Image (cartoon, rainbow over all chains, first blue to last red; front, side, top):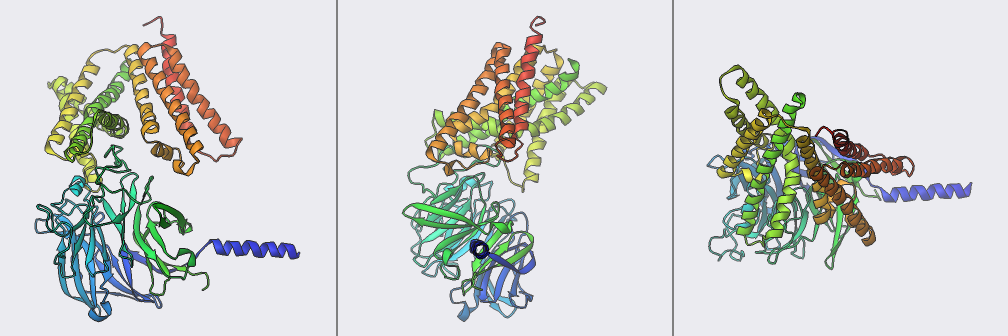
Length: 361
Length: 276
């Protein structure tokens, strides 16, 4: 009897150690794309149709913010990323990326700064408009991150039909952009003295970037969708060419070869790539210790594999592990609260914000 | 033979058109790669063309069959009840079918151009032209009575064409080929990877060559050999499922179909030897 009890306890213990529990904090979100914590129990989040909302995670109340820019909500476009200024507490500044029509009635990517005062945005200023006009809003990228020096990075996708332009420096297709928070161009940008190149380009040869993280060490990690196969994580450095579409580990959706080459001198190799594609959708570097097994790991949400990849890089090698696959849902975004609790945002209409409950709570 | 003449002509014309259309995307892609100093040579060009003929070609084949079936049926009826000659109607219908197909592919696919070769005006014109020539090929097929030898050869080559993709995948891109069979190659041991690559490549290369030789020589033994290999694959697939408990999969249905096809071709040759 004692032995059976011991076995039961052992089994239960191992079960509780091998799985996470979840709590749906918000639901019925309308195509939510990104979120950021205002405090431990309050988030600011975007919905692709063009809504910016503040939600209380305690009482579930939701307040819609007024004076949002007009966005083009079609296909993969809409109101995308929101991030806070590092000095948000003092200046109330936030940054939004979105797709909208330009003056020639073509779709492109915009970056706007604004002040969040009460329930309204004020002093809205478009600080960047991508020179990447396309017929419709696809492959925008739209991820934003702050570098350690206070400059902004923005991922501008290849526009699908314009993939070859990712190899040219006279446009913003398939580029990572670096600008100051007022839209001006940092004087130490890598292509500032290169004739014919746009001054705000930081790196090029990208496809559809959906993850952009700057570590406290200053290292920049990015991930991007490949076509059929060839999703990548890259270590971003200024002026480097990441190869798309001249080198790739994927093939086209039609089955056609995009390039028979996977490497070339002068073009960077990914730290890792996924074939078949997992469709990575967001990424954080988890530095807290609420979940000790996740500390100092990259966490990458995925739409196709419907899980979170826990990834570590060391000495040119990597290890990865699948987490939260039991949710069995397309995951769009991941954030850690100021206290370190992980929240997952599910994809599409009727989306949910899911709290991953730490084991000791 | 008249019963099968028209569908056979649609299938043949669609395949012929695919052969014309596919290189448009391949060549435009290769030209661009060359323009950015990628080391495009004979080997890499051949690799791109062969892969595109197989993978892109098969994807297009089904779409073009549908487009041609509608276009040629309508133009056939018009030709029957008017004085307009089918010699001109079918090529125009072919060009229209390809143009409309390319247009719908863009409108239905996020308004994005899936075919790289169709992004420029010259690419579009070449696609329409391919449809025009495909339509004329259809006219030639339906206006002349074809014998059984021609049909067997055509179906044998078509069969080889389908198998060719697996051969190329296992030679050049085994990790992608492995994905199609439900496993991740890199997760296997080195010995496991080696065994799978050599065995799968040999399997598909042998069936590809056997079916091609059958189409060329019209010796039924080649087709029977292919049929035996695929029937064997289907039988041992089922034994793996029900005896060794590997879990149910539906690949055995494809294997049965890939066995029945050459079996019918072999039997047709065998029983019609005296008539040809």
